[in-house]
Length: 559
Ligand SMILES: NC(=O)C1=CN([C@@H]2O[C@H](COP(=O)(O)OP(=O)(O)OC[C@H]3O[C@@H](n4cnc5c(N)ncnc54)[C@H](OP(=O)(O)O)[C@@H]3O)[C@@H](O)[C@H]2O)[C@@H](O)CC1
Ligand SMILES: Nc1ncnc2c1ncn2[C@@H]1O[C@H](COP(=O)(O)OP(=O)(O)O)[C@@H](O)[C@H]1O
Ligand SMILES: [K+]
Image (cartoon, rainbow, N blue to C red; front, side, top):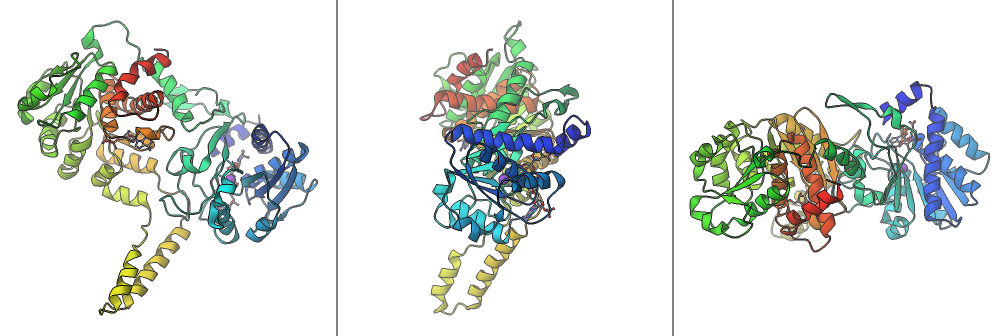
C-alpha cells in the first residue's frame, strides 16, 4: 500500500493531501449511508495519517449537519495530517485524546476510530491502550461500542499484516475494539482477512481512492491489472472472489474439446476396511471437479466396502507400496490424493513410491501425520500439503510456536499450589507463577513491528519443504516455495467446519491437479470452490453435501 501510494504521488497525478481527502470523504460517506439522519459523533484522531483521515471525517460530518466532537493529540503530525487538523481547527475544538476525556463526553451515535492504521509500530500503551480497552468492553460497554464504532482502515491496535492485536494475546477474549464497519482503502490488507481481522472489522468496505492504475504489477511473469476495486458487503471474501474469478476463467475450468483422459485421471488412495468414508468423499469431490476419471484405491481386502454408488467411480485394489508403484507406472494417472482415512502406517508406506513418481499429489490427514514422523525429504513442487492447525504444528513445530506468540502461563496451577501449600509445597512457586504472568504481559507490551503472521508461517513452511502448503482455517493461506501466496477467507461460511469437509477439499484440489492446474492455482481455486459450495448449500451442511453443490457453483461462475 505504501509503495502504491508513493508511486501515485511520485507520478505527480495525485498528492498525499488529495488521497487523504478522498479517504476521509469515503469514510464520512459510508457513515452517512448507514446513519442517514445527522446525529452525534465522536472522532478519535491519532498521531499519524490515520488521524489525518479522522480530521477529514470530522469536517465532512460537521458540514453534513452532525454534532461532532474531536479528540486528538498535540504532537506535530506529518504535513498532510497537520493540514487536515488545521482545517478542522477552523471549525471546531480538539479535546485531548485521553480515556477520562473520552468517557466524560455525551453518548454518541457513531465513534470514529482514527487512532492507528497501517503505521502501528508497537503495542498501544498508556492512555490510548486504556481507551481502546474501554471501547473493547473492559468497562462493560463492549456491545454499545460494537454497534457504533466505525474504524478508519482498521480497529486501532490491529496489525494489518497478521490480523492479530499488538499487545494482546492471540486468542480471542481480550478487550479489543470491535467495529461495526471498517472502511479500508484501495484493497483489503492481510490483517483484514486473517486471524481476528474478520471478527473485529465488522462489515468491511473497501473504498476506491483512485490508486487502481498504480496497482499494475507483475504476476507469474505477466503484467496484470486487477479488476476495479468495488465496495462489497459482507466483503470478507472480496479479495479472493475478485482474484479467483479472473483466475478461474484464465485457468479454463470449463471443459473444452478432448476425451476423458484429456481431463486427467485422479487416484485416491483409501484405507482399510471400515475406514473408507473419507476417501469416498475425496473421490466424489474429484469427480465433480471434472477429473476425466477417478479411481479409488483401497487395499484389496477392503474393496467390498466401496461397492455402492457413484458408479462413475472406478475401484482398484492397491496393496502396499509395491501396489502403488505398479499403478503409478501408468502415466495416464495425473494426480494422487493420499491421506484421508488412509491410516498413518499405510500412508507412511505409500509416501516413498508416491514422491518418487513425481506425480502431482495432495497430502492430507494421515499422510501429513506420517510425513511429520518420516521427515520432509522428497517433497517436490507438485505436492500440495493441506494441514489444519494441529497438523501444521506437527510438521513445523517451530513455525507454529512462533505463530502462537508468547504463551500465557497456566495460572490454574497457582490455585493448586495454594491448596497444596499447606502440605509443604514451597510458597516460592506462587511467586514464580506470578512472575511468569508478569513476564508474559511484558512480552505482549513489548511487541513491535508487524507480528509473525499466518501468511509468514505458510510461506516459511512452503520454502522449507519445497511444496505448496495450504494452511486451513476460516482464514486459509496458500503458499508456494517461491514465495507466492494467497489468502482465502471463508469467515462467512462457518458451517464448513464439519467432519469430512477437509476430505472434500483434498478431492477438489486433486481433481484440479489431475486436470493440469499448477499446484498453487489448484490449491487456491480449490479453497475457493470448496467455500462457494458451502455458501450455496447454507447452514445444516454436512460434508456429503459439498461435492454435489459443485455443478451449481460452476454454473454460477458462468462455466
Ligand atoms: N499515506 C497515504 O497517502 C495515505 C494514508 N492514509 C491513511 O494513513 C494511515 C497510515 O498512516 P501512518 O503511516 O501515518 O500511520 P498511522 O497508522 O496513522 O500511525 C502512525 C503514527 O502512530 C505512531 N505510533 C505507532 N504505534 C504507536 C503506538 N503503539 N503508540 C503510540 N504511537 C504509535 C507512529 O509513531 P512512530 O512509530 O513513528 O513513533 C506514527 O506517529 C492509513 O492507515 C490510512 O488511514 C489515507 O489517508 C490514504 C492516503
Ligand atoms: N470456522 C470456519 N469457517 C470456515 N471454514 C472453516 C472453518 N473451520 C474450518 N474450516 C474449513 O473446513 C475444512 C476442515 O478441514 P479439516 O480440519 O481437515 O476437517 P476434516 O478432517 O474433518 O475433514 C477446511 O477446509 C477449513 O479451512
Ligand atoms: K483506525
